[in-house]
Image (cartoon, rainbow, N blue to C red; front, side, top):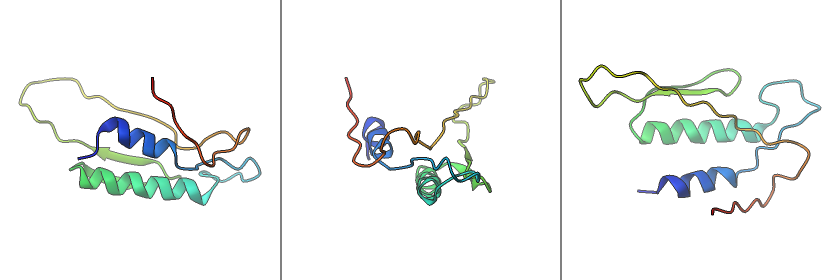
Length: 95
């Protein structure tokens, strides 16, 4: 199975540069492609209720693996990159 670090680097390499001329959300088809990829991978990892809404927001639930009464947690992130710099051929560096 792919390591989390490898997965995040792979995601960071995907060109999701936003288009400031487009008022739609998401502003590019590339962002839709990443949303669909994330949804597919979440399903493959065993997440439930995987959905993508009309703005390419990806949502999913991970069933509890304990009977203990513990708090729910949520993770939120954006998929686009700023239009100020190129998003092509990005090579993330980890330290």
